[in-house]
Image (cartoon, rainbow, N blue to C red; front, top):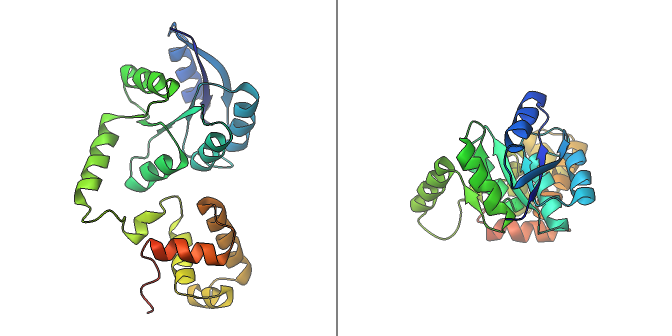
Length: 220
């Protein structure tokens, strides 16, 4: 079996070093780098081109979701596994949409981590048992193929959802600022984040994406 070149991205030194020591014992895994922020992870991924990255979802700077999206967009051969304490639906779906090949909870057994790493290295996706059960339960509750509006764009914050919903209602920046009691600059910042996360270029495209997802249907 060829050696899997692995990066660890986590700002908690004890966890990162402990994981490094644990994985160093694997004969087919070589830890080639450690990063402590989203920006550092992106830069190191470009320079080192590891096979797999273990990514903390709450890493400082650009968070793990955004860092994953940028890394996978630049090099789809890199398999990113989210390693986190978060197991809510929003975080799981955001990771999937960003291109993560795995989602493992901190505290998972060593065997589960090994399976996820080896699956990601070969282009497969593997989610821990608890996460897989959540996914199965979520999809079994859906009455149609369309996600509910509040879950259509899980990478957005709650406030960004509110702003996007008002865009889908046809509101301009000034109207959004008035409705949400925000400054025009804050609204502009939220809209810029929405464009970046949804990879849209202008208000019309954002409007179309939101309406297609069922947003903007309430006018009150």
